[in-house]
Image 1: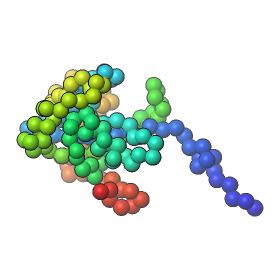
Image 2: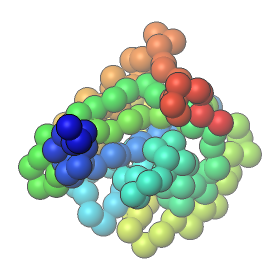
Image 3: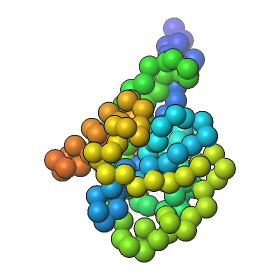
Image 4: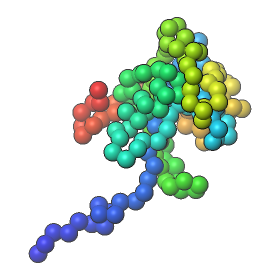
Length: 162
């Protein structure tokens, strides 16, 4: 009897894989971006392309938007997003680190692409007024995980990503 693959493997569902990066400055403010395509501020990041490793997609988007090339090896939050305006998806929030003064200077001098209208540093108490509710909740959970020292390594087939 020939072996047949389940439909889930031959016709997998269409899904988005979002990547965001939580970055803090020396004063504990969160780096956020204003975009031409979303209401409210968001963490730097974007979707992974087909066959692009998620942490490398996060690095690519973070560098393009902020000028920072950061090693993103730990996940602070994972957020499932149901299908509404876009296909269902999963968003990972990576820990980008607390920046040095020279890294903060890189952000200040960086010229982001046209879809990014501004970069902002906001303290956690300012986030509810600046972010859409879902973005704020995701960011708050990531900040809570960071405060508690809880983070997961991003694994590639069981091995921590480089």
